[in-house]
Amino acid sequence: MDAQVAQAQSIHRDIVLINSSPSFVRNQMPRIPFGLTFLLLISPALADEGVVTPRPVPATRPEMKKLLEDMKSRKLRIPLPELTDEQKAELGERGGSYESRLRFHYLPPGEGSVFGGGAGGQRPAQRTGTTPPAARDFTRNADESMTLSYPFKTRLFWIVSRTNNCQYCLGHQEQKLSAAGMLEEEIAALDSDWGRFPPEEQAAFAYARKLTYEPNRLSDADIAALRAFYTDLQILEMTLSIAGNNAINRWKEGSGVPQSRDGSSFFRRAADLPTDRPVPNESFLTPTPEAYASVVTKVAPLEIDLTTGLPTRRGVTTRPVLESRAEVEAALAAAHKRTPRLPVLSEEAARTALGDNAPQGSLPAWIRLMANFPRESGGRLASLNAINDSRGDLTPLLKAQVSWIIARQDRAWYASGLVKARLKELGQTDDQIFALDGNWNQFSSADRSLFQFARKLAATPIALADDEVATALEQTGPRHVVQLINFVTSRAYFDRVTEAAGLAIDP
Image (tube, rainbow, N blue to C red):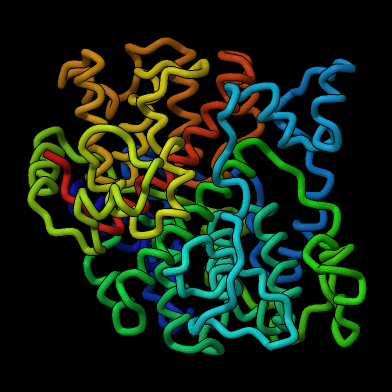
């Protein structure tokens, strides 16, 4: 059976999931053994986190545009109380925003979603990624040492959002890329024809998709492939950006934010709207070039119909079966000794760079990594360190338990090592920690609902069905659910950044 499982998982990676390489050709796919594929898709014993998405994943560009437009009328997932007159005055224009209301009513005071907006600051586009001179730049790099252009990073954000099927974020990137001067056929090529882009961007696209969808498979080879085109600091900048995109996707989709009604905010003034081409300003239903009208995505992971061999509109995400306790302990021991793939500053240099943002005590490797870009990272340190925060309705123990569940799923060994130490601080035994890898029968129904919610949202932003959100709301209430969504965003970010960097677990 083990050999069959291994064969099925290998076939699943190569066949059922769309390959992230731009050179992928459908007619080169090997034949799929029917029994193995069927078994793989339905048996939870074959994969730790096999999830078929409850909402359709559009296979072609016209389908994608239709869903983007339809999601403007999305039903709100989280109930909101009526505002008092005082609250209306306090919130002002923000009182009409679903997201602002979620934060206002359900997040602890001072705890916003730091991944929900830009980093602030502007500087000219740099050498990687090109934009026509007259086009809007959208550059938001906060650090002078950042050299990747914002239009280029927006293309990466598009890849991330298409992989995650986050309609809100995908719609925003469509609008921003159009405002930045990209033509419809260029945006369409992001989904199926990476050969239109320079080799360095193709390498970055593949990295963005893998870090998004299969962070558990990231290796030294992935970073080495990027070094042919980018410096280590550029790879770190790219990683921080992609990880942030993944966090935003999880906030928007987890809380069920409806698609924006129009894209007028992405143009400085009405005169900026191009007259030579349609743009997704008031409607996403713009014409699609014939060459891309029926081309199936090579970015979004789709289930393959067993009868026709064609992709369905159901997305699939799987993670390998969780390792045994002995294997985990061996992996953690190895992670203590590994050499980081990306630059980590010395304690002194990190403190100098972070200034007042540097916390007290010895600085762990993850903070010294992020200190390479102190202005970009400084505001995020508190949120990323929220695992130790006792504010809000989520207990420190629940946060640590959720962090372990997510890190194990992501095979984020640095994060797993830190979380294990945190659970020990909270009085948990090794047996209790490794019980989190099991069926959770010994936990309360409320805890189980939050564990399941977090694990699904962390695996892919759209794995959660509306009825599962409703169950979690019934078990715990909207404050717990919204705070959990916000917390999962930070853990999705943390796992991707620290494992891509290959950090050694702090002594």
